[in-house]
Amino acid sequence: IYKGIEAGKAKLMLSVPKHPSVQRALEILEPIFLESVLPSQELLETEESWNKVLSYVPDEEISEKLRERWASGRRSSVMMEESDVNVARWQDLCREVEKQIGRTKDPSKRRQLVKCKDEIIFAYAYPKLDIEVSKKRNHLLKAPFCVHPKTGKVCVPIDPNKAEDFDPDRVPTVAQLLNQLDASESAEKNWRATKMKDAVQVSRPFCTLSDGPSPIPMLSLSLSARDVILPGIQQKNRCNDWKND
Image 1 (cartoon, rainbow, N blue to C red):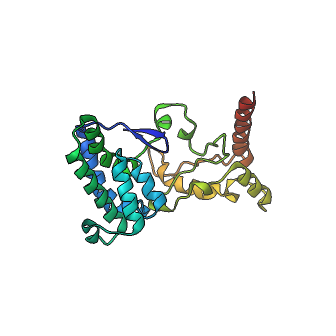
Image 2 (image 1 turned 90 degrees about the vertical axis):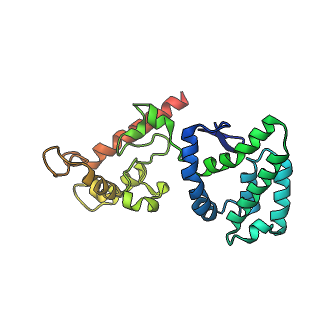
Image 3 (image 1 turned 135 degrees about the vertical axis):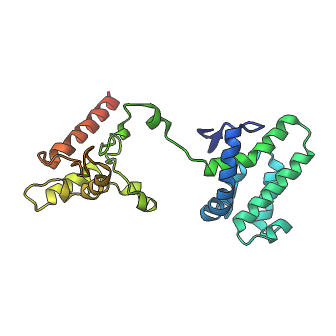
C-alpha cells in the first residue's frame, strides 16, 4: 500500500473498489485516526499542517474553499458540533468531498475523489515497515548491538513497557562509548562502565538457555569493551573508504 514519498506526500496504491484486506484495515484505522491521530498530531490545526492534508484532495476548488474558511476562522454547521478543531475540520473536508462526488460526472475524477479521504487516513495512520530490513537477510540492523556505518549509532533493544519513552537520537554511539571507557575509573574498563549497560540489561530477560532460565551473557566477559566496540569502528571506516573510492 505504502510506496514511499513523492512530491512531499505519501505515495499509496489504493484502488476503487477497495481490496478486502484494505477495507478491513480501513475499518481499524478510521476510528483511530479520528479519535487519536487527528487531535494528538494536530493535523488540521495550522495553515502549514492543513495544507499538507489538503494536498491529497485532487480538486483544487475544494482545497481553496477549505483554506479560506479555515484561515478566516469561520465554522460550518458540521464544525459547530465538534469541540476539537481538527476533527471538526476533517468532517468539514469529508462533507465537501462528498458534495463534489455527487456533482462530478467524469469517472476518473470521481474515483480520485472517492479514494482521497482513504489516502489521507492511510498516509497518517497505516503502519510503515522498512522493507529493506525485512527482505535482506544480511541487513545490518538484524544483529543486536551492531554499529550503523553512517551514524555510528549502536542498535539497542527497546523495553516494550517503555516504548513510548524511547528516543532514537539518544542511543549510544561508538564515540560516546569510547569516551566513557576512557573516563572510567574501573581497571577492567568493560561495557558496564558505558551506556551499553542499560541496553544489555533490557536484553537479558529475553535470552535464556533451552534447559533453564539462566540469562546468556550478551557480551563475553573475557573480552574487553574495546574488543567489542573497535570492530564496529573499523567497519564504519571501511564503509567510508568504499564511499570515497
